[in-house]
Length: 293
Image (spheres, one colour):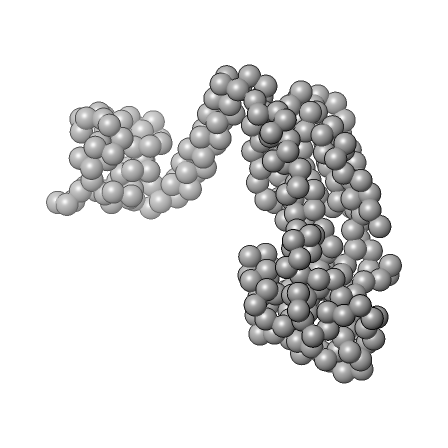
């Protein structure tokens, strides 16, 4: 697979040999073996080197996925051998990572330095796909509509939508805000179809006139934070998503309502067969979190 990918990228047998640390004849023999195995020509030879055939182009994405899978497996095996207490493979939504892990994951690693935590962001269907493929030990997420067979959800933090703005925004005052006041500022919106956007559209029906929308519409958390810090904008977002910025004082909460509650966030974990490392992580998170109003 390395020979295939390097040949496609470099277009030269000699440069591929140099990149991988093989001889030129070994690269040529490996390519001949692969073409014979698949019974298809993978590269066309020309004066300056080689170029992929259509069959090779179709095969390249598969080869890349195989190499990524091998690399991931190597990390797991190496961590288990070198650290002795295993690996926890976790995926989580941005909101759950912000709400559950930012304050606790470093503490877990300080307490259990021999356990490696492999954390990736994933939302919705991608989380379920990782579970179905057996690629994950724990998922931090919002309570799902349907819990996967053989798994259970443990709620750790309640959640709700809140209206936020940067510290020092003209509307950052202690008195309650009315619908007419909330209709006046410019709002930073998420794309149509996102849960926060649907809830905002319902929320904005109470305004006496349509709100002004900032011209950037995005789900990018980095961009949301940047714009909210730099511009006098309001946004309706889940509390646990913005919790780190509220805690550090970068943003302030302007408005919230019990009518804007969300499903809690927590842990999805197998009912049986949980590894010792994953069990340790689950117990640590449960001991360091609580349901909040």
